[in-house]
Length: 446
Ligand code: FNR
View 1 (tube, rainbow, N blue to C red):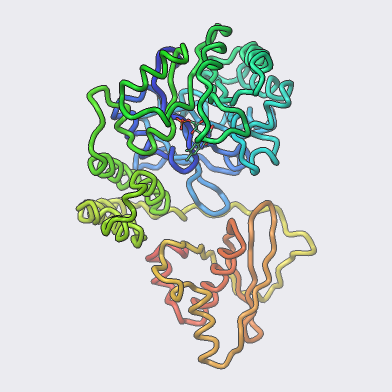
View 2 (cartoon, rainbow, N blue to C red):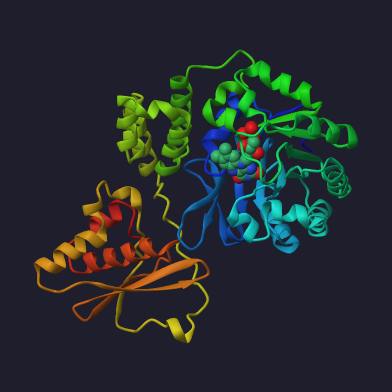
């Protein structure tokens, strides 16, 4: 059973806390690594797949094949899955689904973003202590791994302490506290004195968070621990900028960190867009340099790697994975969604292919399926394609009409633009403008 006392922890960070960053943090000396926040209903529509080629466990979105959570044995005893939830029943279902793959489950009660608050998640739970208590006690009573939560503070100390005591009474293994209120932003000072009062008032480990602004080196982690009197320390931005801050021997040059990160990104077939985002957040103002600008133009994993002289490594590894049967991110057949309602019933004469729109395949906007189709249709005097898009369960499907014929992809997409691009791709393929072979090769067609 994982213990949260005297630990240095990688904080949950959306898009940053994917597998490569978590493994890097462990290599450099973090004791525990949190996943990015994963929303309960997204996990519930995922399928657990053991990926023999990569040696990972993947939770794959059944509707479009994207990977919601990828983990591997190396981190199993140290990874905490952070969940966004507002419902004890859903939270429990998620926890039971993942409990054998992770070392702990955390509930996010500190996110102030509109998306979270409007959904009753994140900080919204702090103003509903009964609900927060219910979610945590439901998990603590039924899950085999330790349960924690991550909160922000209230402007009033007594109110904060009261809330912490209530949450601690559920039997959670630890509580992570970001020492800012819901309305305070990173530029505001962290309330280390409040963290100290909380750690004195509770008999479970308190994990201090919010100190990155004052963290330059490894020694600052101990200083922050001392100033807050907390048992453990959790770092977000300081680790996002240079993950080697976890190294007791001292920070490494950024290029070394980026290379080590890219190696994991290649080894674990991390999505290029996610990889780029993480490297971008390491480079920060260095994006203005000539190399930074070249980096910003890169689209594929190989192009990103080439900038750090790892293009050959990436190409060879990707080839090796292909030979061993890794078919890319879209290999999961979408689950059949509930039968269409009358209103959105599809006509029978629609040409339908299981064709996904993969943004990373297209280098320029003119190459995008919709642009390509528009140019082709005009050239051939067929008029303008028309798109009718329907939405269900936060997913989109588009039917394209061109010259009296209809085309659609059976892949539901996460936004309207992608759904239209998918439909355009089916049309291009069906008209022979783009070959089926090309679509199979680039992973769009299953
Ligand atoms: C965050 N934070 C955050 N918190 C959380 O509970 N779940 C999450 O998914 C995220 N996502 C996230 C993304 C990014 C890019 C940043 C910078 C931050 C908040 C984070 O965990 C932490 O509480 C704050 O950043 C304060 O800690 P630091 O940065 O001072 O160490």
